[in-house]
Length: 233
Ligand code: CA
Image (tube, rainbow, N blue to C red; front, side, top):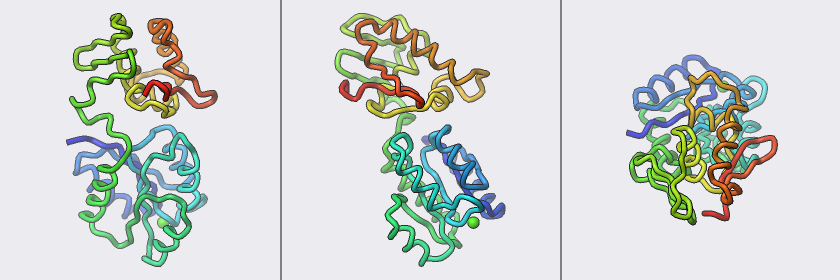
């Protein structure tokens, strides 16, 4: 089963615990946040597969968090399930047009929550961890085969390190999409690595050097991170 990273933003400890328990039991990785500000900043750094967002939060409320996530091109594609206390609130949330992907009303059963998450994940835009099928990515004259640890451009083999290989494969799997440095680090190097955000720059520089005349495939987005050129799709 595909493990997904789910960010839950909920200020009520009991509900948070129930959500976390049931989602983890399904094999998901859960990150819990207690308020809107913290939640928003974790969305930006962690790039979760789904966000479960309570409407009523201390400080920045769920509506504002959703609005900010959906108005930022970097985070827009991340699905959000809003959690509301009453069905009337759900109507309001949908009516506001803030772009929530689904909603769930308290009290909800764990089964309902898990089912909603499943639906949103299934139609979600990002499924890079889905295993063998996406191991091989072809973009123009560039071919990356993760399973064989092989990358070629213009039929020339690229001598990539495992990290460079994963970085190129990940970026090329999502042409046109910007990824923050911190996100690339956790995806490509691993969350436990003792590294700084700038460490990713070193890998990108090495990668570009090896790509030679094709180095423009990896674009720098100032103040954010990197993306694979959309034109190469
Ligand atoms: Ca609440």
